[in-house]
Image (cartoon, rainbow, N blue to C red):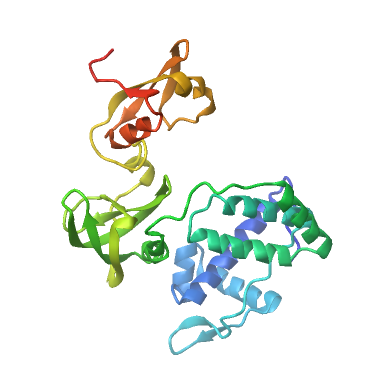
Amino acid sequence: MARGTKGKGGGFSKFRSRWWALNQILRRIRGGRAISAASLAESLSVDPRTIRRYIAFLRKDFGAPIEYNPIDQRYELTDQTWTMPNIALTNKELVALTVAARSLAACTPEPFAGTLEGLTAKLLDALPEEDREEIRLLSGKIDFVPSSAPSKGQEWVEQLFAAIREGSTVEMDYWVLSKEKLTRRNVDPYHLRFFAGAWYLIGYDHSTKHFPVFHLARVKKLSTTDKQFSPKPFVAAEYFRHTFGITAGGEPKMIRIRLTGRAAKTADEHTWPAGFTYATTGRNEGILRGRVGRTDDILVWAAGFQGDAEVLPENDL
């Protein structure tokens, strides 16, 4: 398919908007959701005539095997293996995407790293032989070192991600570390976070009526129920706003950490969490300050500096 043309008239923007709409229509038809003209129109904020025009375009120009089932009053794909043609990319763009995918694979946690490797293989297959050789040469000259080892609990990620997408409650047997007890929990999953080499789930716990953080390494058994939940107000950025890592909750308060020795010498090399600032107070000494709700993660982080980071008492000005 020819790519749109960028220009003052917004041709490329219009093309991109239509391309997005076509893909959304196909996605819903393939998934068996929102598959009448009226429901498709409502989900895409257009009128039903526009939907019928888009479907006619997909059939005529792309050969999409879409048929209307008058009995069920819905659109269906008669060939589930059919896919949309790809937008044309130059060899240079494909080379850049392949190199980027390989670099991302080094720091992408499982199970998404495996999917990314599959994407890299597809991109390489789309390249001419001479460009594939260029990638092989680049691979030997660019070293992407993995940022973390496989995480315990990663086997639950895909199932939880699907439950989040479908809005399904999950049931799990969860080991509560503080009580040293295995508990049965019904949870509405909202958000997954990968932090410091481990996976965590934030969800609405039916038993406590709160949004705790669940360490996936402590999940012993997990099943997706057929119960759909109505989402409650939840914004991950706000939830973790005053969090230094993964432990959330508590009234935000100012925390000061004195850095000395090597920690102070290398302070300029670090990117501190949002809201934290660092100021030098002397030779090889400085203060890192910011607001957090709980200090659990701060204390673990400071211990990693082997005495070069000290969390100051609240009354120490």
